[in-house]
Length: 550
Image 1 (spheres, rainbow, N blue to C red):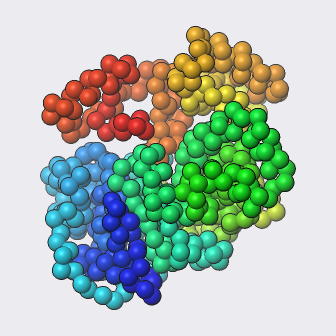
Image 2: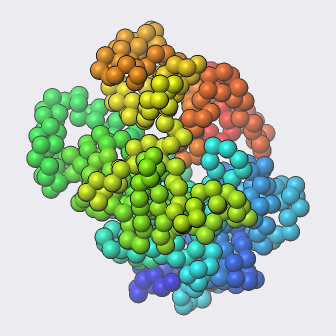
Image 3: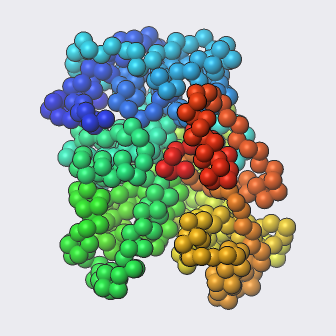
């Protein structure tokens, strides 16, 4: 893989330092020299986003090995499962992950070599040349994904799976060598690994990593590094959208201008009128990318009115990841974009999205039965999502497992109800609609800051009379919400913020155990801060909590 002609060009920004492509290649080659890997032998990367992650990644590929990217926030028990499953020959760690890795290795008995990137001396690294990529059909990556049940499954992705995604993006000229990409999401997910790592490097663009993930660090990076694009999950765009729209709706003149721009649908005019919004994002943004789950169409529509494209994509780890993607200047709010080249899609009789093509995984590692459950005898991958194809655009309408089928046979898509209700109030932080005790039930975790600001004394009654009753008055009988549950803690979620619906009934019944902490700090300052926050918030504060985000 040759990235860029000018090897002195900046490849990575991190902690105020610039790393050139020459340094990136030298670092990757130096890491490769530490490895003795046969074709498809496995090496694990277990660290936070940082330049060394890419050195390790490219170094493993240079040796024709299979790269296994694992969540840097994994607990000992999780990491133990992963390494017992894939039995890697090497594990790259940082100072932050070393102790967890060592404990898990000792418990597992797996024979492996640990390489701590904070102890690898690169002061004399000067190797040049190109980074060798795995053969097209070789397993280039194993990434772990887990559904609602069972143990995590290792998704085997070939180099060709990745190539078809790169080729599809290049067709639309989505990335340019002048791009500067802010890498927010952890790279053990294929979505950020491809979009914030592999593709920018293949195009000779620049990646910015953040050491601390906070709103201020993000704002500073957008400005200081002149970021042109950023990849995020819907939760990020919905949070930013809420803040922007609160300011717009609080000013009658700006609100009128927004309505005018909505009608005119002129991106250049919107950029001029909402110049301050663009400056807030650093002033250089070309577009945003959303993936991981469905984006609320209202969010996409309003960003479009502000002159910013949120290009939504759809796919799964098993499809490396993209099945569809939205080209710049072709955003259709509510749509997950156009089907990628080299990918086939059809909608089954029950509405499920089926796909096959060069992007489809080789299978689940050591799990042929699980592979056969999702890839049928004709080679079609069953996504588990429901959707429609309209004018070459894919619309994802729901998830098969999330659809509520009532006793009278009526089908309800809970996401549509949730998005409608969330758009009508700022008193709700999170919500899901489920069938509970044979009743269509809204489970709501309130936005306690807004509840306090609005001086609401009875949140359940306020939401019922002000929001739920109004919704019920405008919908068919079978879609009416018949019960409302207020919860005092966040709804259970995956690590990239998707609500785990199947766990909500257990939450209501008090069956979800408190998260057990591992490797709790013992120093005095930690105990003082932990006790203070626990008293302040009225709930236990975990050691892995982030002071600002959590």
